[in-house]
Image 1 (cartoon, rainbow, N blue to C red):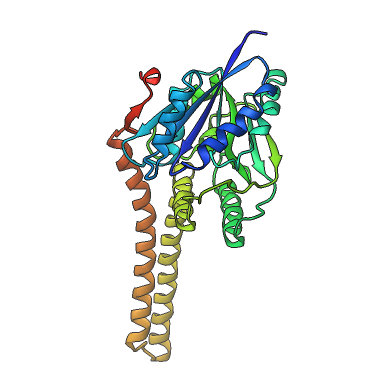
Image 2 (image 1 turned 180 degrees about the vertical axis):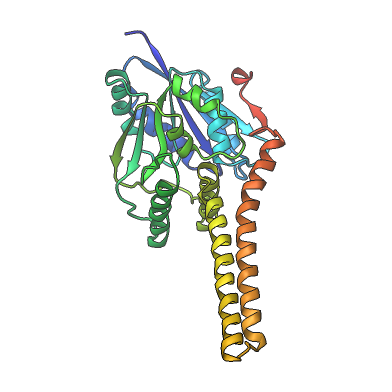
Length: 316
């Protein structure tokens, strides 16, 4: 069999402790990856620690296999994934987290399935969230449930970014050049035959996650806006419902005044109605504003990321 190349795209943000551990873990299973060479592409996403220094040292120590990209600032994981895929040269591309929550020992099975069962992508999903806070797990499950109800794109509960793709699928994902990115949705949107492997949740080998509940909440809102227009329909429905209710209340007040000579008096009811309608209007404007803001950002045509430094062999 002809020798092929596997590119491992690994975003890094303040991961100086985990990078050597990740490299060692992958190298342990290298022998199981038959007839293939490995290309590591580490993407330093504006780290504040010594991540870049570690990557420089490793690139010098292993010049044939390790490449790195370093952003001018923190652009986010989505931008890091895009940059890594853009600079990858492998026949197959895997995107992985450096903290070893994505087990490297699944790679041989993933490669076998793509090679021999004609899949375009082998994804992974966690069947448990052991070690994760209960509230965070609850929010994650609700997110997937809601997304599958309001979006035409399938969102697999527990799915990770960790997946192995053919070059054809990677090029399809790269053709989507929007700045507002949600990779899980994009991987599903482009289609292609995908199979998911299940595994138990793994905890980080070192360091702390940079994802807080608030950042995950904002990330989920971006996903909803990127892959569903249902919130706009909800805003229209809320506005129409408020208008109909106001008509009924107005008719009720007129009937009460004419037939029973009982005019409605008092500021409390009036103020309550004004506040309720005003609140609904602001809520609907907020939904519309979110979509408008996303559109505004896309019209600027700003780059997804800005590269500050890379190894010499990886320059375009």
